[in-house]
Picture 1 (cartoon, rainbow, N blue to C red):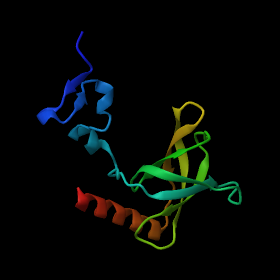
Picture 2: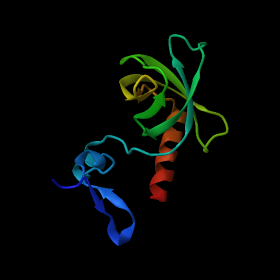
Picture 3: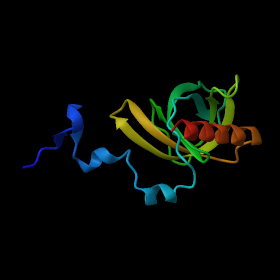
Picture 4: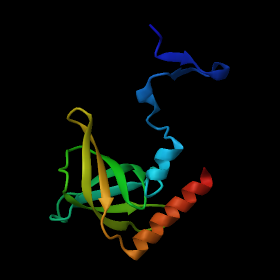
Length: 143
């Protein structure tokens, strides 16, 4: 039986041979199917249900963001289809950027503790679109 690990090049540790460990590596043809470039940055956001903006707002760190939406982690499950409001903090503005979106997916990452949310933006303001473009341009320059 083949090992799921192999010694990495130049003795720099083990690398996985398991196919499910390649989730961060996307083929060029798959990347081209995306409508927007995904940016992996650690921005902070607060979120709430649009139907109850005065409710307690939770703080989270994003997993990734694009012009079309954002992925972030939460401590309680959200329902697919729920309308959320988020206040995103970036280094491009001193104040936050308000965006609204719809929950597309809620996946349990750690049983009963952590859930990953995929939120699709709905009609972002002109300022929000400009900031999302800046995030993308800044991040592409760094890579």
